[in-house]
Length: 165
Image (cartoon, rainbow, N blue to C red; front, side, top):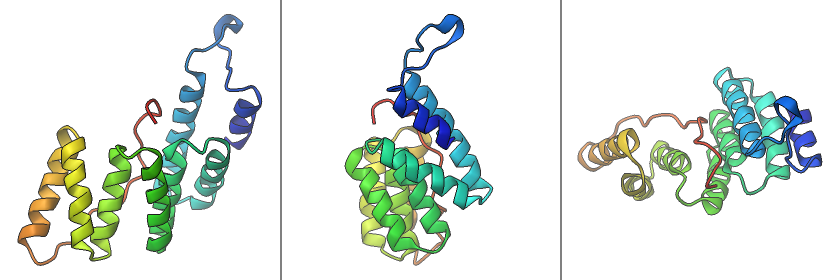
């Protein structure tokens, strides 16, 4: 994957398909494919592989939130909540409407016991999200405002597609 990222940067994200014809949206296709693998590495707790690819993606494509979110998830799972929050907040600065990132920030604040900030982010999710995301945010808001304490859900590395980031 690191070879693919380096090659893509070198060829200015111009990929060829069947018949040596240019592939439209090659950069997004490549990044989405790599993100699927990185998410799988994270799921399998192969954090070193996921970290290596995500750090390279962050250097080569600093405007894509995937890498920051991945590094936040890895940091969180390794017990470094403050570092995770830094990565998630960097992703949020790039794309303030990225529901996955907003959800991870809300969950992290909730896990840290900061209900006030968790509620801020769950409310943003409720505004920006759709379907299940909006429903889950509403449920977390209800729980946080009505019950003393419940364990929050874990942060997630599954990202939405690259376009619009």
